[in-house]
Length: 408
Image (tube, rainbow, N blue to C red; front, side, top):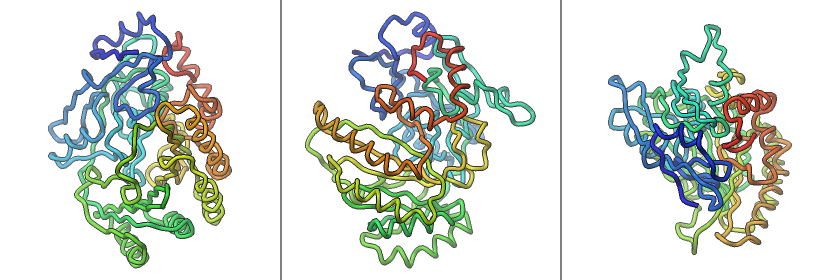
């Protein structure tokens, strides 16, 4: 079905008068598998929700929900400002509203921790305009509405504009190299003791690529970075360089990804959250290796980002991202050729097989993509929101009583 391209002022009447199929989907960056479902209607925010306004001092930015993270960083960098965005510039507001994990999150926090104000409409069409200042009490307790929107907004509302605090753009030291599963386990264990300005990411497909990112201005992290260099130098394909900021980070996994593939591909991505793995790391990686050897499609992959530090210093009740003590975010990508249902079934079965191997050490879920169309949606919601899920369901009953948006 076709997309609807509403202007911000039309969103309220659009939802109040909705008579089409449900759930109503929202497209901002378009990286979610659900954003292009041919059986449902999408509110495409990429045409008319494109505001970009930086404050005079550069410390605040107002961004329309249809702006991608690459476009946002491109607007900020000439002013010497930045945000802790992720490993891809393609996502839109969904990145900001569902958590927003970055290689800089250990030092600068999650994207939702930088949100100052939100505008849009609730699922029932009621106008929405909230600020962090108005929504947080003197003792730091967030209102349920504010907490719900920070991390679970796609279930409750259509956000058209977001205001965020920015940081100075910072030079980074980065390194990439290829590793074996055994060596990956060693790097994971090493990284769990790193200071907050240094993080480890890894991408595992046919081979395994690691990515280290260190903030140049963080002295402790630079020292830890320097201690890594002798180990890096012995790795195949090692590349060590300095870049001007997170906005020019090389494409994640580019050392091992094939640049071309013969035809369009569909994907589903399941994000997990985990505490420190410690001494369990070698066994976990070995279990993953067995399943990785059975990948049904070249696009099937396992990757991870590192958390901790600043992300753990925010109370779990402050936002809908409740897993504040998580140190790792592994995510599993299932891929298959478009229009091949048998291949889709094989890849999704493989995804669940790998998830079952990881789950004892990865109890949480990060809902960066919505899966209300898949069988695992129920346990995924429980794993993502835990004891806060009943509170989110009360908010949904209050603000999306006709269940127009994806279900909780």
